[in-house]
Image (cartoon, rainbow, N blue to C red; front, side, top):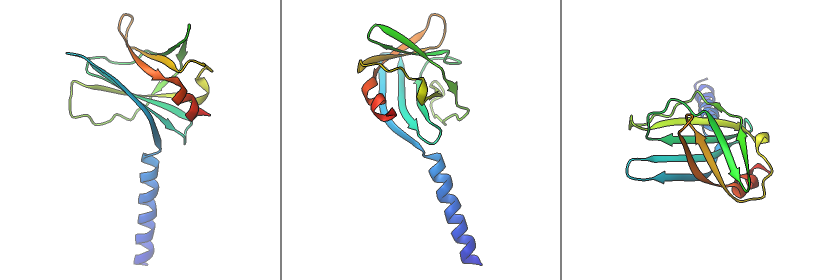
Length: 140
């Protein structure tokens, strides 16, 4: 009986660990200057068909209002929702947002050198490079 209970606990632990780590990291970009640090980690959550942006900035912002991909001569606004999961960050000056977008919401662009824009207010946005070919390769 004890061995069955221990085996069951082991299986449950494995399932929980697997569920917590279902993101496949594919890119990381950052911008750092004297007083600014902004970054994102791009990953795929294949379990829920989400492209995940973990957006981090050291400014006092409350939310991300828009995500826009700028490639070639066009812009595409992505529909997203903020995940309720908040990572534990030691530095209280850093704000982190886990933003979920659906696989199907990505345009078919041919330009590999794109820019991703995180809009946080009417006048404030952060542009970072996005290797769109890496993203497309993982989405197909």
